[in-house]
Length: 144
Image 1: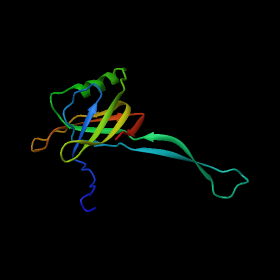
Image 2: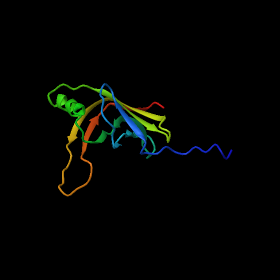
Image 3: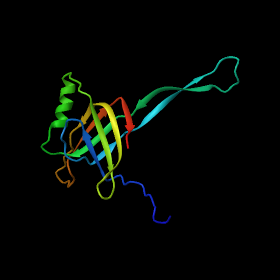
Image 4: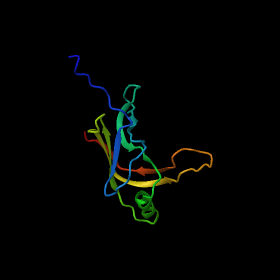
């Protein structure tokens, strides 16, 4: 039917939930990807084309960017890791439709901060000061 059009979701409508932390909105989320290594194997009596077997699954690091405010929770989580206390958390990325309803969800499992970038400052600039935090993790799943 002509009225049953199913448009893709927009990439600028989203929210991020970090287990146990109350952080303001994020301006950008990047890096959630997964890949499976390929292992080539050939026995001497087989044809010249090797078999391809699945190897380890690897997950790219997730990066969150946000406008700098007085909130210190994400930075304090990083600082705890620097001091040797690695607390792993679930990060949930939720796509929103035009009305603000949840429409797609990804969960990043066992995440912990591995890199922090403080904002750049420029006396003649007029942009928002952004902080960046990168997370290693052990899995990514789409739950909705």
